[in-house]
Length: 295
Image (cartoon, rainbow, N blue to C red; front, side, top):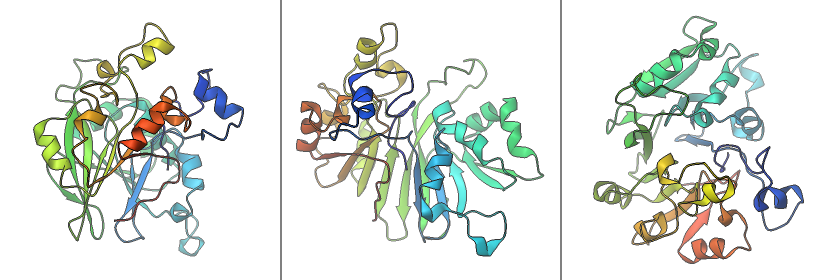
């Protein structure tokens, strides 16, 4: 539903070459909304992964997620929302789901605590039992309707910038491992700080990987805006370099590998760039809004 990192492409206040190219309508680059995923095991119950600031637009552009007029004035095929972190880019869309429809929210205890401590998110509780929180834990699998399950994978412990460090000990952003009833797996890792041997072994069991494509290089954002952090300091493994994700995952040759959560500054967004060609030649795809995957 959305393949960009925070801010989308083009970003509202940015004049980098990618944003300028999109505004000029150049054919070698496509606009993208902020990172958002929807999954179903049966085509009836749909589960959102995170809730992006662009969620209203994304829902309206996805017919499968439209309300059914035969089921009354207020209804939705969205059966739940799974949060991978408390980052604003992943949770602000929850505020767009406050229109008196019960929402089941899957989150770790730390993420739930962060959001419930914020007065804005009380808008999700204007009716009794409107927000239905379900605790999820690292490595503990849980069902998602029929023929689909999910297992959280703890990845990074950096708190969002708006949260004080002492408030939520044990916080971790997570990745998600989805598994069908036939045993096929998809891994979704929108913020990947590193690839451990244990994680590598897990990824080798998957059919599809949706991997953190935020930055091409470690200093990409610093070169665009001095004073900002490096990729790794923000919890993102860059693609390029001897320890980047292209090198770290190069041996997974029989798996469909897709970069998503792509920052507007990343040169792979330009289909004429050498970085885009390098990614394609390494066997990777670059996600776009509306990409559909069936396993």
